[in-house]
Length: 127
Image 1 (cartoon, rainbow, N blue to C red):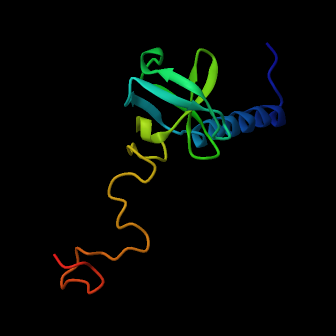
Image 2: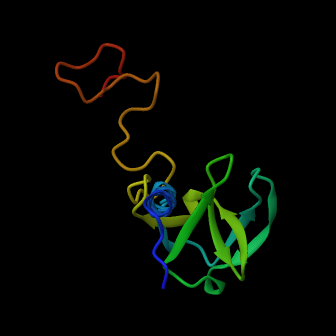
């Protein structure tokens, strides 16, 4: 068996590290549960393309892509389909396992006063 020269083995190592880094960087998490018996599906551009029965998906499944409008792309029967994040429960990935697009504990709605402050905020309705 021939040994690779130093620069060739370095090149092979660099290619392997780059590939592994790309795989790890593309970790979008997993869909752990589909929250409705039937959910609407979308293409990568956010256009509706039909429906999917939750029973047709083997869970948990890996999220392989994100759509342009934030949809979660999963593989079903060898094809990537996109689901709204509101229709699924997720785990892992940058989403942190949140149930919706803004997640739990997202804070007050933008441009709305924090009415839980003490003393009461004068911009809040009387309680």
